[in-house]
Picture 1: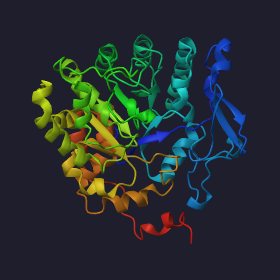
Picture 2: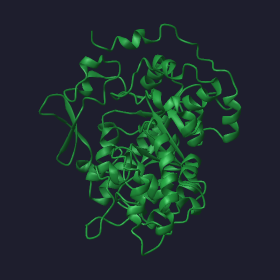
Picture 3: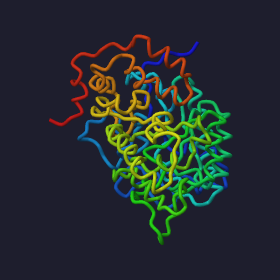
Picture 4: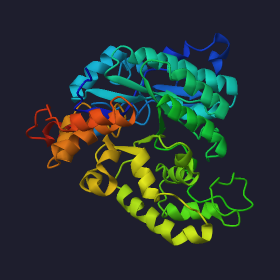
Length: 420
């Protein structure tokens, strides 16, 4: 019988030390893997090559805001969110969470720094094997997105096919486009085909395209940036067309140009069942952009000769989900986004999250939201997007009454994290 879910965090992180999963790599390559060293400012740092990433804001679970540190923490202190699966289940229970979609630890964000293709693939494989074992402890509560190599389409396709057979893997976490770059290309079709074939969701944390390195402007003639591959008139400035649809939102972490590249490449015509999940983007910006992309498309499609069978906003609502933590504006405007496209997340144990007080945060967020909509946003949207439940099961569970009791005096315990 399918489990009934009340709350699934659509974005959590396993901040366990990389030494636990590097052991799955061939011995000859381990010196190229993420490692733990002491940071000059104190505490531990994860190091890839010569780039140290200090432990600090990724391990803030339960800490008062005044005690947040950007560096100086150590794995030896056994922080919440850095332990094994048994500890993780206890932490879910403390936070009123039934299950989590689990992203890789801090080290994954630096995978692009590993230029040796064999080492790049070995790091991804080692983590994926380990996280599959981790999730096997509680397969109805621990769901992982696999780390995809950034060394090219062939490597990404091979690893995607391999992890499709691993227990606990529900998505494929991209740190770049499948081709390994910051911009999409037709070569990515081989990866999108595997996503559709295996029914695995393609996933980005914040972003996996150009803006993740701070670039928001479109590539210009004469630059060394690879042109965008968009279907339209070969005589038109198609990158500028894509930039128009970005509506001048200059926030590097938002996947605006990444999403536009996917839509404008015609990917959904070739792969109509392709699904994407973008974590920790927030949702308050979406109503404005959804309005603007359609308006800009109508204004600029003629000179560009770009012909889409559907409006850009329709593709987004049919294929994408987004996560948020505390985003009251987005929740109030949920009908303008699409109730089925937004997913609450704890981001545990990172600094944006509120573990172990997430129940109180959600109570404030969803007060007055109808139960059917709340059930979708708190659990069922992400469960369906990742294939944990079917569309039919989502519809059935959405009609069920919530079993989580209402909280009284909602701000009190959470407010203990605030100074003064």
